[in-house]
Amino acid sequence: MEPVNTCMENTTKLLINHLFCHIMLIPAFMYGEPWMFLAAFLWWYVIAIVAISGGYHRYYSHKSFKAGKWFEYAVNILGIFSGAGPAMTWAGTHRQHHAYSDTENDPHSHSIKGKWSVYVNTWGYGFKIKRRFIKRLLSDPLLRWFYNHYFKLNVIIIVLFTIIDPMLMIFGYAMPVVFAFHGYGLLNILGHKGAQPNNNWVANILTAGEGWHENHHKRAGDYRIGREWWQFDPTKWFIKLIKVN
Image (tube, rainbow, N blue to C red):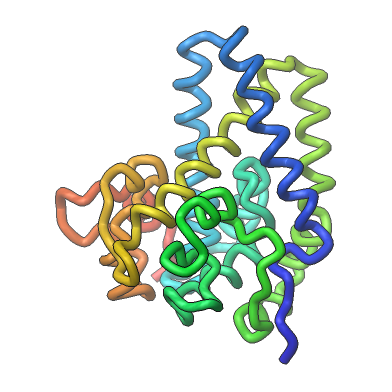
């Protein structure tokens, strides 16, 4: 089957959104207060645990647990605040990463593409994925709807938050996108030593439990990425609370 662009016609929009959110760092540092940065990081942690680590990754990419329909809505709504793109294309890109780790077909292979290229292109702008990695996801009406409307929803949130208070837009929307961009950029670099997956506590803190990357590659179908008691993994704790046995 023909490869599919991870963001198709939305590739440019994804890049523009990341640039916009980084530009918002200027007024953030000019007018923001310390508590705003802390609140933005805590808000990012909610997004990371529920939407990206719990939803996009462990639920949609690996189907490592079952949850109620409410969880799928929460994941897709909160995923808008991450700047990571729709869940369907994120999951497809990640599945291809596992299937072709450290080869030309791996979007995160910094040994082939270079560390800087992988870091700034964490979400795979324009990367071609094989259709088989999103075939099942394409049949999900909820995922298709959020894929079709993802960037419209981003614009609505930006406009609405700006009308309410520009600082709300900066710290409630732009800052979490920046945290997500750099957290997962670091994970894709520090999470591999050459061709080998690697556990890294710095990337782990920034991604709410995703940094135990060696653990994950060994047992990708297990939602418990933090295997040892001392391995911080708040997403695992959240999933324990909401999963359906």
